[in-house]
Image (cartoon, rainbow, N blue to C red):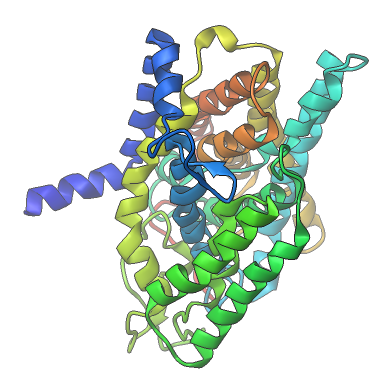
Length: 421
C-alpha cells in the first residue's frame, strides 16, 4: 500500500499522466491518424446522441465535462490566493508578480499578432490566424511548478513568485476563453446565462445555510451553471469557475497564529501553505483533495485527445505560437516586473533580474491550457493542428529554462522561503 501511494505521489508530482498522454497522442496520430481521429471522435451512445446540441463523443466528454473539474481546481487556487493570508492578500505585496502576469499576457499576445502580421499580413488568412492570439497567454501551473523547483531549488522565493504568476495567469486565461472563444457554429444566447446565474444563487444559498459539503455545490449549482453555459454556447468547461468561489474556505487571518502545514508545498497548494493552528478541513480544501488525483490522472486523456498532431502539419503558425510563448513570456514578464520595481513595488526578497528572466522563461510552458485554447481558436484545418503543435513543443521550454538557470546560477536562495508580513 505504501509503495502504491509513493508511485501515485510521483505520478502527480511530475505530471507523468499529462506527459505520457502527449507522447501517446503524438505517437498514435503519426502512426495512424485515421484511427486516432476515429478514437477521439467516437460517439459513445450512437451518432444521434446529443446534450444541448453537443454530440456525445470522447472529445466532448473530455473537453466539455472532465475539464470542468480541471478548471474548477484552478479556480480553487485563485480563490484561496485572495483570502486573508493568501498570496494575493493583501494586494500591495502581490503587485510585482501581478504586473509580471500582465506582461505575461500582453507580451505573448502582442508578439503573436506581430508575427501573424509578418507572415500573413495582406492575406485572407490574417484575421483567421490572428484569432489565435489567446493561445500563448496561459501558463501550465503544474509543469511550471516542477521546472521552477528544478531550476531554482526547493524553497527559493522565485518558485512562489512564479506560481502566483501562473495562478493569476490562468485566471485571466479563463476569462479570455469565456469572452473571446464562444462556439463559432452556435451564436451566443445570453438569455440562458440566467440559468448560470441561478446556479450561482443556489451556491450562495448553500453557503448561507452553512452547507460544508462540496458535492452539493458542484453537482447541484455546478450542473445548473454547466447547463446555462452549454445552452448559451459559451464554453461549458468553465462551469465551476463561477461556483467554486462560493465553497466555504479556510478562515485564515495573517499573524502569529499561523503555522506551516507542510515544509514543501504541493504544486497547487501555494496559496494555502499557512493556516490556523486549529484548522479543520473545509469544503474548498476537500474539493481539491478528493478530486485532485482524478484530475491529475485524467489529464492523460485530455493530452491524448488534444495533442495528437501529425508532424507534417507544422507550419508558420507553429512557429508563431512557440515564439510567442518563449520570447513573449520571457520579455513580457521580465519587463513588466522590472517596471513595477521602478514604481516602488519590489521583487520578493532574494530575487534579482537573473531570477526574473528565468522565471519568465519557465512561464512559457503553456501546454495544457494552450492546447485547450488552440482547439477553441481554430475550428480545424489548416491552423488548429499547427497551433497545437506549437503548444506541445512549448514543453521544450523546460530544457531552455534549466540551461539558463545553470548558466546564470540562480540556485542561490533555495531553502529560504520569503517571510510573510
